[in-house]
Image 1: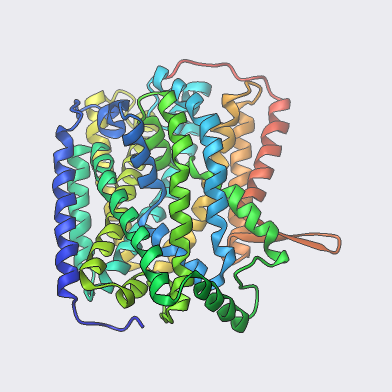
Image 2: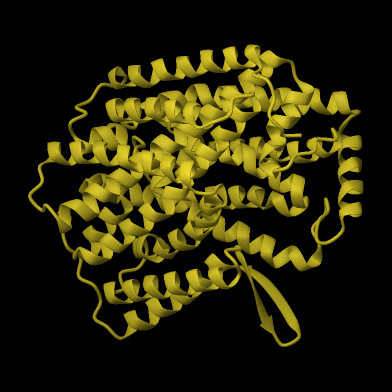
Length: 494
């Protein structure tokens, strides 16, 4: 259960020790792979010099987050097999990265693009459509940062510490070392974070089933639990879930690397070859994700009962492991919030500075002023997310993050399609984006901010991910309008 509990002093000591370690690493990162941090290319992209190993940890660090570790087992605990849609999604995404992102990296490197919206501006000129792409990225990212705070809040509470003060202290520290070191800080911390998470997960998948009577008992317990629960839950997908499951996986995969934080990690790579090699090796994280998801079934077999599904993983660890390991696991999850939150705030700050402030407010901004502006905006973004969590119900962040996935998917034609065809026009892409945003938002609101909408064809019903429905409308409008307007003329990036 999740009632107030006394502070676990041993666990808290271990937690604080690792948090201090990460803080030291964060501030030390400014001296690592030294560069002129008064330049946005250095502060916001690490100088585009990260090799295969660093990029692997960095992309993994901002793709597999604290909220992933908390939310995926919670969903599996609540609904069973349907919660595993994140597995095919992360399998689909890496061939996409392998095929598409090296091409984007080459253009961005050649033209000094720092954001996806920079690329759009460089290809089409103008300032309003790139601004729309930037706003989409920023708005979609803000609740994502807030959800990292949710993950941290859950593990801190599991150690017996209530209130917002620990969260505030953690994010003040995060804000300071991100401001000082830029992208180098989460890149260094990602090493520690991923090693810790792998240790936690490997220990969990070996020790927990052994204490519960083996995997056969774990799956049998979960099967009986969902059979008694009834409805659409179960350890095997129901036929009526197939299209929703598949479309969620596909839509999530297409959206994943449109987010500012994942794109920032890609553009920070040292070469297109580095991007390709990472796409080959990153599926190792998918194995990790599958093992993390199984914690939901283990919690059922262990008889864990919680008021909120998000408390499942901490409650399971508190029940099975000694205090020192509970503290270690809590630190690993909390650090898994710091890495993506830092990258997300940097990505959002890059977008604001390059694609909103510079073209719309101060066209004559100097490179040094760009970097200073981005540093300040990264602070505002982080504290905005912190205020969101402190003063508004967590459910708002979850609902907005679902909408964020729908919205970010609508910039895919402008960034991905234009890498392969020069027949699309800016009016077509702009109108397609607008139609996708309006349809996606409207359907989500109609569904009570649920991600799936049921399409009816005759007597058949097909539940589909709203983001894909909106993207389909976006693509149709983009191509139809582009067929009736002059082909775009490439312009030099500013």
